Structures are given as structure tokens and as C-alpha cells.
Image 1 (cartoon, helix red, strand yellow):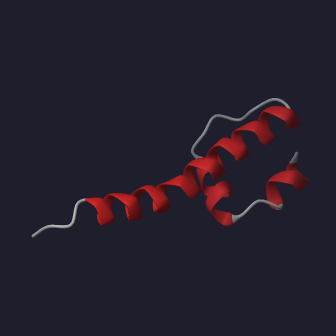
Image 2: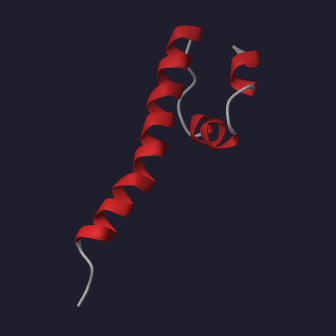
Length: 56
């Protein structure tokens, strides 16, 4: 699991550091995927919000 964790981006590693340790590689992969998806969604959601709600 340590090798997998070291191969992750710093952002994902930082997020994982704030979470409770998991007991299997499969659980670690699932958590990393969820975090990665969420981190990728944030900028897109922000761009869509800014485009739709431009102040006058």
C-alpha cells in the first residue's frame, strides 16, 4: 500500500493524511479515486457558477 500511496499526487496524499487509515489496498484505491474525482469537480463547479452568476 505504501508504494501505491507514494505514487499518488501530492493533493491526494494530503487529503488521505486527514482521513482514517484503511486496512486494504482496495479500500485505499477506492478512497483515492473518490478524493481525486471530488478535487477535479471543484474547479469545474466553480467555473460554471462564475459563468452563470455574474454580478451586474
